[in-house]
Image: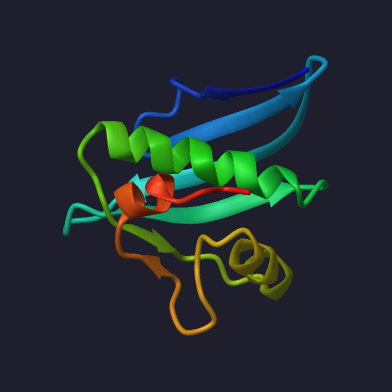
Length: 108
């Protein structure tokens, strides 16, 4: 079973750890910008398919708190390729203008 939990011991940024059968298998780090956006600064997992769940976790967290714009400060080209494939960003932009619109789309 895969579980994603917020690491509450880190106070200056949002950190979510993904665990599978008690072993850490990934994580995502984000911060709030001065403009009121959620900024995803780090994403890591050996299983690229986990990027989807990790990103959705941060976006849902932000959305529930009234934050509707996300900026992906990811620089790794392989990660960017996957994030485009999952529909988080586009070739032209690493900014998701509306988290609400993203979650209102069919995810099939």
